Length: 237
View 1 (spheres, one colour):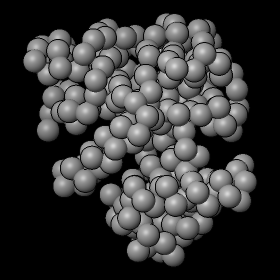
View 2: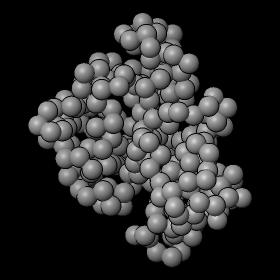
View 3: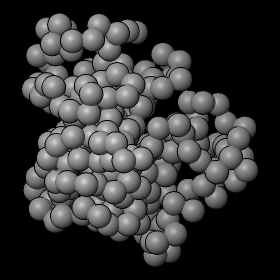
View 4: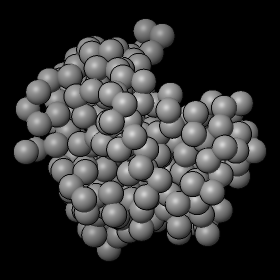
């Protein structure tokens, strides 16, 4: 099985092409990183994969099945779960209800199993199960949106800006969880503005600049040759 294959995908917003003929493969059982500055097109690509923006060219497929132009719920049902940037949860609902909402298309047994799986990855949330989302810390909110993405037991988890706005100690807590998810056979596509976290997790890395992929290769090569990133600020701590 090949995982997620993005083949020459383009995405437009307000009549402007913001992703141009991007090709990326995210194999199962590995972390794949997409790096790049703000405005490079990374988040627009994520929304295009999720079905929240319409792709204007190319194809997206999971394990050989094309999912281009499907509705977001159909993309998720096919095995691709997208965690958008900005920790978009339902703040006036409890942790339990936020997770339950994420299982609306699943059977009762699937829902229970999915929530149990997510709680095993984020035991901190179990002690806050009845707590409102708005009262969680930034790190706990990030755990919750990751848990929402995982309750459907996806084949591929796409996470947009995992570390945005989080303290280093929180990021350090999340890193082994991402590693564990990939080790279980899930493909993880990690979109990051800052490279140090992503390169420590990823096997393969892509760099996007000005709507295109400007580099693709091993994460180790980028770590060893940081000049390949072109933009020095990508390496900020």
